[in-house]
Amino acid sequence: MQEDNLISLNVWLSGRSYRIRIKPDEEEAVRKAVKLADDKITELRNSYAGKDDQDFIAMCLLTYAADSAIEGNSHNPLMHKELADMMSKIDSIIKE
Image 1 (cartoon, rainbow, N blue to C red):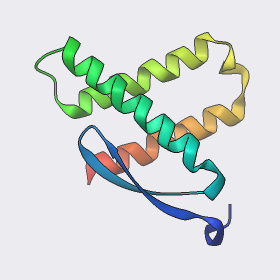
Image 2 (cartoon, rainbow, N blue to C red; image 1 turned 30 degrees about the vertical axis):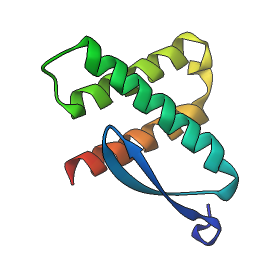
Image 3 (tube, rainbow, N blue to C red; image 1 turned 90 degrees about the vertical axis):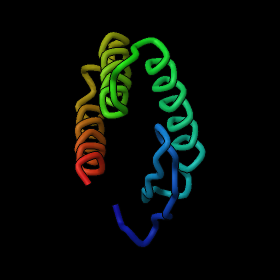
Image 4 (cartoon, rainbow, N blue to C red; image 1 turned 135 degrees about the vertical axis):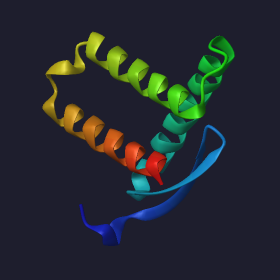
C-alpha cells in the first residue's frame, strides 16, 4: 500500500483519540467500525464493573474475532493477516 494515497483520520475509541492512516475510500467503513466498537466497549463496561479500558478493548476485539471465526470466515487467510496487523497496532498504541 502506498502511503501517498493515505489520509489521516482521528477517531475516538473508549474515550481516547487515535490517529490512523487509511485509504480515502475506506473512511466511511472505518468510522462505522469505530462506532460499533465504541458502542460494544460501552456495553461491556456497563456489564462488567471494575475492569479498566484495556480489558474492555481486549474483550471487544475478542468478541469480534470470535464472531468472525464462527461465521465461517476463519478460512480466509487475508482476514487473519489483517486482524493480526490490527491487533499489533492496537497493542502498540495501548503500550504508548
